[in-house]
Length: 147
Image (tube, rainbow, N blue to C red; front, side, top):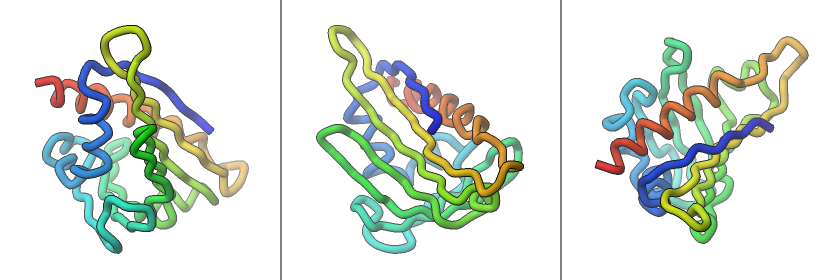
């Protein structure tokens, strides 16, 4: 598993809500990464919902389908299990986890992204490029939500 934390100044609830309830707005706010996000099955905001994400990574347009595996509103945590798309050419398992926490004893909040993965074989790369883009997304979305 890979993970990182980034401090944000926007509301923890607001940041979490963008990925839980308002994810279809992400392509408008962050067009350098997100091309389109569509609900394939379910309502998109509950466990078992299936979404298709079109995104750009390393200058390449890519697409994944994921199932919402966990939503914990109290902890502001969402787990997306990827099951289809180019990323699955290199990994047996690939999950992206968002966890937004209020910072203890001070201003601001903390966004933690984790990528749980299992390589398909020894030639599969460590998915560091996903952490890089998630870091950029976190900072740019924070700037937008703080306006």
